[in-house]
Length: 259
Image (cartoon, rainbow, N blue to C red; front, side, top):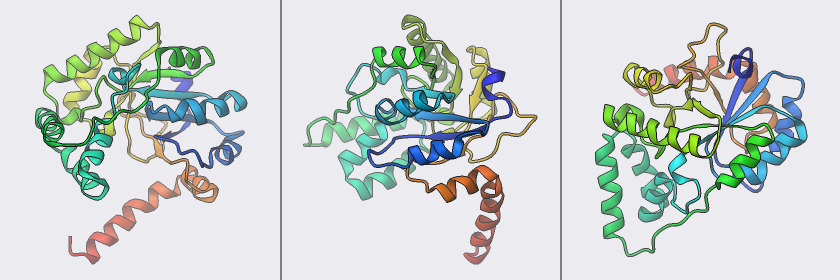
């Protein structure tokens, strides 16, 4: 695990579009100590990222939501947008992320019950695809069983998430259960303790920072990029200056807006 992470600049992607800049990104990554991580396990990873990882022989971790594998169950945030419409749905997703987990689940069920739209389906990754990617060198890792906000979960909910995902990994002979990315990057001292007790050895954030030399293995920083990030911006992000400037810009914005 240390060999995979130590001295690396860690970048994280999510869903990947058909028209993307990934080939250009991989050209930038050559000769650098880069670890690519991808959250959620969208099937676009298999179609667009996986071929490049094989071509360039680069290390990568794919964090999967185990409850979605081998199904057509949609990502819950996509379902909210589908049921409410793009503008209202996107705003609601951010609001819902701050709700207790049981309230989030009840709300989504209410949306389904009150909607005249047919149920949303999304093609998800299969066990066979995961095993193929693992055999080719991709680390298949843990992003929870259903992707709740961990800082909004009870202890019972957290332990159920870990235990169901662990069972999934064991049943399918996947090796990365102990590597975990917090859904949405949400964590707390409490969730960190539960993660340790449930056998997690390293946990990744979504904080858009470089990983320091003396990093906490349960709070590993990552740089956020998308497949649409330009090459010049990517180089700027990798330089570390991007994360230094962002807090200053935010502070100036708050001062100008009386916050």
